[in-house]
Structures are given as structure tokens and as C-alpha cells.
Amino acid sequence: MGDFWKWLVAVLVVFILAMAIRSVIEWVAWRNTVVWVEALTWWWERGKTREADHNPPLEVVPPPPSTFRE
Image 1 (cartoon, rainbow, N blue to C red):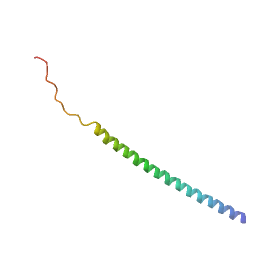
Image 2 (image 1 turned 135 degrees about the horizontal axis):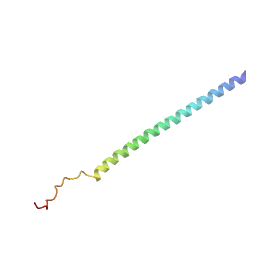
Image 3 (image 1 turned 90 degrees about the vertical axis):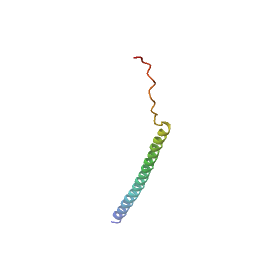
Image 4 (image 1 turned 30 degrees about the vertical axis):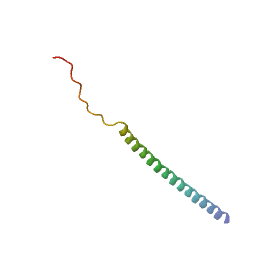
């Protein structure tokens, strides 16, 4: 009967360790996801402002005078 309790305690310890390791992995993955989303958002906003700086709105230029004779 003593072997049963040792086996049960060993299984419980392994289970608890597995759950703890899983929690740490999920926490790291979630944190990594948040960091990537923030980095991509920053990159996207930076690209939009940089694009606006390099491509100012075009000025409206009147057409040249017509050379067509009526």
C-alpha cells in the first residue's frame, strides 16, 4: 500500500510542475505577443507619418494656356 501513495504523490508533483511550466510558457507567449503588436503598431504609425512627410499634397496647378486657334 505504501507504493501506491508514493506513486500518487509522484504523479501529483509531476502534474503540478507541468501546469506551472505551462503557465510560464503561456505568460511569456502572451507578453511576447503584446510586445510584437506594440512594435508593429509603432512601425505602422511611423510609416504613415514618414509617408506624409515625403509625399506632401500636390498643389493644384492651372493648365497651360491653350495654343489651339479657333
